[in-house]
Image (cartoon, rainbow, N blue to C red; front, side):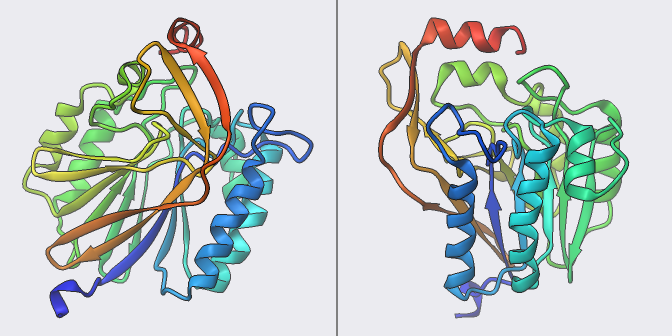
Length: 281
């Protein structure tokens, strides 16, 4: 049926947390190898992909070399797929090295907001980071820019991507680290052609909505966060995922694709984790 045939298919990969070649993430995870597996799966699938969308926390410590490793891994695959790579900035990223290592641009520190057209589908990427903090926000200037862009509808609609989710997490600690004042974004999106908002950051997949617009929070390709408890722990578990996003004339559907699920990466009590993030929340 035509109603079930997507007009566009995007792949969202979030929270890759790439490190230098001689490092492991949290001393256990080869996040580069995990991302390579994701890309191998995508390329082997033979599905037509219209864009690769990487939604932040791309390098674990904002390191230039890590960004260069990421670019050298992702860009050749994207070229073979005939798909552009669209990057978003996350709280672990650093705007200067991000621009230099991924975009080959001047390492400036202003927010990286951009629009990309795939035929008649518009993809808008917003920078929700606040340098030095783990939580996110959109400035009044960014919201005005977004409203001005959305004032002209796209024939196939719009996908909006950002790092910090505008919807709650089942993990209480994460809720202190989300997008601040999401109601302001809700107001801008009201009545617009945005079919779905794609976010990352939480290391678990979940779905919600702001106003009438669906929100998809993608899991991390590096590792996943435990979401069922115990409530006094914040647990990182091996096994990541990525997302297939299909855009239809009447909406969009996000589908989580798991990579693996094995050993525990870290298991900290909630007081320890709160101390780590409270300085930057």
